[in-house]
Length: 265
Ligand code: T3D
Image (tube, rainbow, N blue to C red; front, side, top):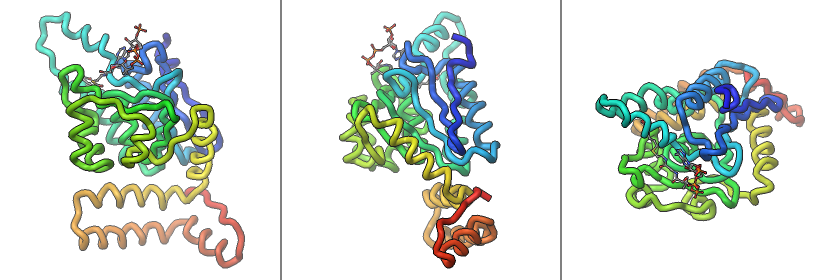
């Protein structure tokens, strides 16, 4: 499959969907898919017309994580295997950008999310899952540690004990279990995932994007702050938000008893 086709890019108004498209391997990440996704996420971050990003998968899976065929290829050389540099070079810029880009990012989890595919879903801001979706910290099944942000996101989302259990056992979590423990925001019947994702992405894409971006910055910063530091940071960000067009528009629309027209500026 040509590299460009390994990732499908679909625009719908101000929402952009990035669809992993290697269904034969359950959307496993080879270098070409990773590069295409990294480029597309960087483009979406820069493009002012994009105000919400959706990640999803083609076929029956979200993503099965790192392509293990590509890993096995590396064993054929006599060079010592150095997984860390592969992660640093190919995954980390992508994961960091998704976590810090000042636009909402939705994972529309259409099927299994395993290994780095699970990490990818976890690093998104909001997860909406199909009933048949599942989440697997598959790393242990191939003798590896959770990577690509899973050890960071998982305990923050579901607590340390549950994170340890998922990571130690590699057990498959169903979508309904994931909902119960707060790993996903919403579960919908499989045939309603596209519509439910569109409803959410349309909504988010029409909101004050700058305020949402600054909110994301504040929540990310809270993980390493004390209350005084965080209050000060909120006040600083509020100064910025208070100078946006969308803030003025929101207040004016409220007073005029009409729906605000946010532009993202
Ligand atoms: O250097 C580095 O980058 C290290 C980074 C590591 C990060 C990681 O992500 S490590 C973890 C890698 N992922 C896994 O270990 C998951 C492997 N896959 C599975 O455990 C299972 O496939 C699933 C639980 C995800 C789904 O099971 P099931 O029964 O629904 O499907 P299946 O029959 O196992 O897979 C269907 C096909 O996809 C199959 O190919 P075939 O037989 O039809 O030709 C299978 O080989 C292929 N496939 C699934 N996962 C991968 C894959 N091919 C390559 N890489 C995969 N990760």
